[in-house]
Image 1 (cartoon, rainbow, N blue to C red):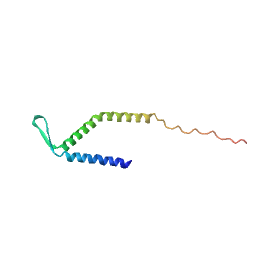
Image 2: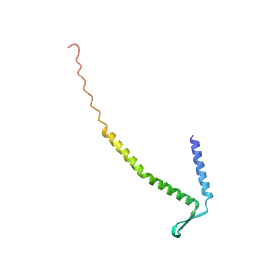
Image 3: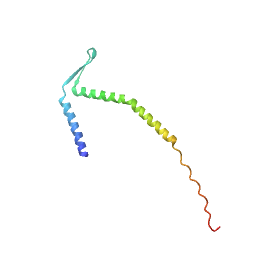
Length: 99
C-alpha cells in the first residue's frame, strides 16, 4: 500500500512539474487604474492558489477558535466535576473465636 501512495505522490509531482514546464510563457494581469503585472503563468497560478489557501484559513479561524474554546470549557467542567476518590473505609477488627 505504501508503494501505491508513493507512486501516486510521484505522479502528482511529475504532473505539476510538466504543467509548470508547459506554462512558462508570460501572462499579464491587468488591474485597475492602468496597473498590470507580468509574470510566468506558473507564478500566476501559484499566487492564486496561495491567496485562496490563505483566505480559506482566515475564513476558518473564527470557527476554530470557537471549537477550541468549547473544548477547553468542556475539559474544565470535566476536571471540576471529577471527585477525588474517597479514602478506604477501615476494616472492622478481627476478633478471634476463642476469646
